[in-house]
Amino acid sequence: MAEKKDKLRVFPFIELIPFVFYVLAVLYVATPTSFWTEKGLTVIQNIGVTAIPLGLITGAALAIIGFVMLRRLQGWRKTATLVLSVFHGAAYAIAVCGGAVFVCLILGGALGH
Image (cartoon, rainbow, N blue to C red; front, side):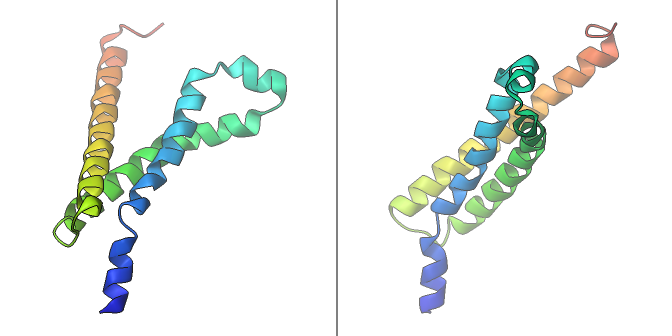
């Protein structure tokens, strides 16, 4: 029984993992390539490329896990897990819709050569 309570204490702290990837993805998108090349930090740029899909995958997975765990949580852990799970789910939905719009624009010729 004590082991079950220890696992429940992890929430909502485990829900903070995707934010590391979110920050790296934002840095990758917001910073020009010339800056990374000029400073010799192309490794960070390469990490940023992988941070976008990793952020989406971990965010979606932790949103699902958070929604499943809500029944077992109580008090502030339940509220915080709900808020973070909704945020991760919304970030995933926005990214998927944005990707679909981007693909439609490419296929429609609006962003082509």
